[in-house]
Image 1 (cartoon, rainbow, N blue to C red):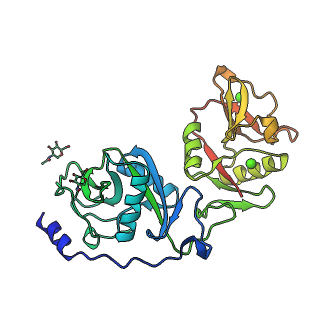
Image 2 (cartoon, rainbow, N blue to C red; image 1 turned 60 degrees about the vertical axis):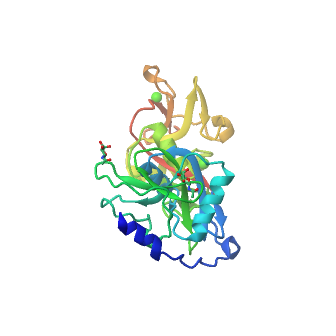
Image 3 (tube, helix red, strand yellow; image 1 turned 90 degrees about the vertical axis):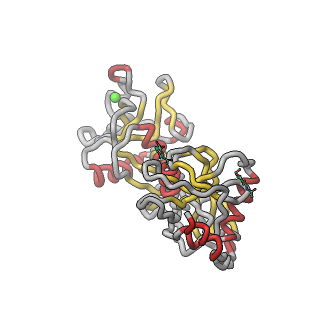
Length: 304
Ligand SMILES: *[C@@H]1O[C@H](CO)[C@@H](O)[C@H](O)[C@H]1NC(C)=O
Ligand SMILES: *[C@@H]1O[C@H](CO)[C@@H](O)[C@H](O)[C@H]1NC(C)=O
Ligand SMILES: [Ca+2]
Ligand SMILES: [Ca+2]
């Protein structure tokens, strides 16, 4: 790979964008830390994932898998690795040859030739075993199989980002002034625990009903989006004690209104909560217990 050697010879650090940081009033998720040198927000994910899962995780958080695009970002990543004691395993960067073998680009589309990288070993390009660029604690990079598991960083570049009332940049979360929460309806049906995880990745939770009014609002949203379909609710049976995904009993949460005859634990396997139509009896609640392994749509909620 003589081309790569050339990169090293001609690379120059791109100007480290001067950034005033969070002081200009821009905010991002609270689980991210603003880093002046990086010119944006960073979050370290210590739990190793495959490259594609890592990239998706960042995407769901409203960020991208971080790459050492410039000196500032490189230094910031290295510093955080040091703080977390990540010295043995490299971390995945967002730089990979995902579409064309050997054509490394960052998630932002920056080609590797525009980054100033020091290789710890010459990358070994193998078409049948795609490689992704990982960064060592000493700042050098190496090509590793994308299917390996490594920790990673997600990055959100500072820019004009409009946070909504619920502290998310995801425009699909719509604020409701009556409940003071933002809600997002799902695109696909998932089993309960995957729906739970999907909301959690957004920094949200499966919708929890805290009042008759919220029950009505969620009911309307469900009907408008999914018609007669049942959706997952953020409650779970622990030996037939119903606990919300925020750890409260239904009574504490403020809504324990089951549909007539529910919860009936039909077949002895109904450990997950759902929200259903209540049109037959206007007095009835909308909660029903159902099996956890049914694929259903769901609504994620973030309190403002
Ligand atoms: C390329 O990857 C495949 C699949 O992992 C492996 O069997 C093969 O030996 C590798 N070839 C080289 C040249 O490393
Ligand atoms: C940096 O770390 C990698 C992996 O631990 C190692 O292979 C390499 O020799 C180190 N390079 C320097 C310059 O210390
Ligand atoms: Ca709620
Ligand atoms: Ca039931």
